[in-house]
Length: 288
Image (cartoon, rainbow, N blue to C red; front, side, top):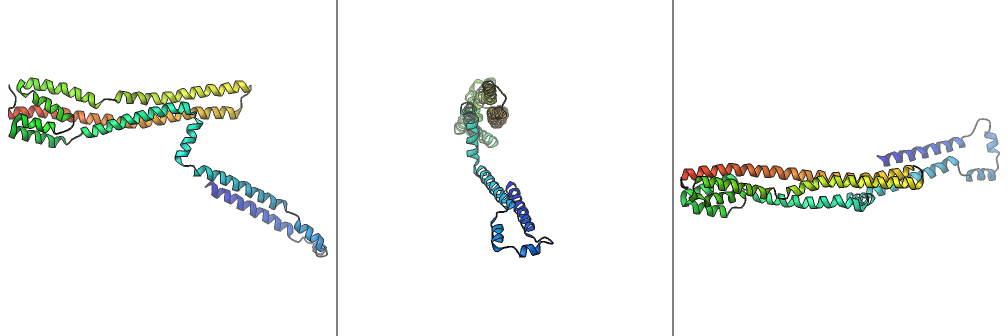
C-alpha cells in the first residue's frame, strides 16, 4: 500500500510539473508577435534553461525512489532476521535469560508429552484382555498380559494381581498406593515447568527496570531530556518484557495441555482400578 501511495505521489508531482511547464510555454495574448520575432539564439537559451518545477519533480522522484528502496529492504528481512535484530536491540544478556527459560521449558514439555503419549493405551481393550486371561489362565496369565503392556494402568494391575493371594483388602491397598506412585511419575517435572513459566516474565521485567535505569543515567550524563535517548532506552527495555511474556505464553500452553493429559490418565487409572477389584471378585481369584 505504501508503494502504491508513493507511486501516486510521484506521478502527481510529475504531472503537476509537466502541466506547469506546458502552461509556461503557452503563448500569451498580445505577445505572439514578439515571440515570433525573437532570435534563434534567445530561443535556444530559453529552451536550454532548466525548468524549476521539473527539477523539483525529478528530485522528489529520486527521494521517493530511495524511500521505496529502504522500505523494500526492511520488507525483505525475514522473520528470523527480524527476530535476531530485535534480540540484539534488547541487550543480548537480558534477552538470553528468558530464552534459556523457554528452551529448558520446551525440553521439559516435549519430554512430558512423549512420556504421556506412551503411557496412554486402549483401556477397554486392555481390560478385555486381562479378563479373558483371568478366565482362561488365572492370575499368572493376567500378570503376563500386564507385563507386555506399557503404561501406569498395566503397572497398577500387575501390583494388584501380585497381591491376589493376600486378600481383597490387600489388593485394594496395593492398587491405591501404587496409583499414587504412578501419579507422581506422570506429574514429574511439572513443578519445574511452572517455575520457568513464572520466571520468564519476571526476568523480562528485571531487564526492563535495569534498561530504564541506564536510560535515566544517560539523561543525567547529558544534563537534559533528549527524546532520542529516552525513546531508545524505553524501546530496549520493553523488548525484554515482550520476549519474557512470549516465552511464558508458549510454556503456559504446553503446561495446560500436559495437565489435561495427566488428568485424563488419572481418571482412567481410577476407573480401571475399580474394574480390577470387580473383576477379581467376579472370577474369585482372591482369598476372602
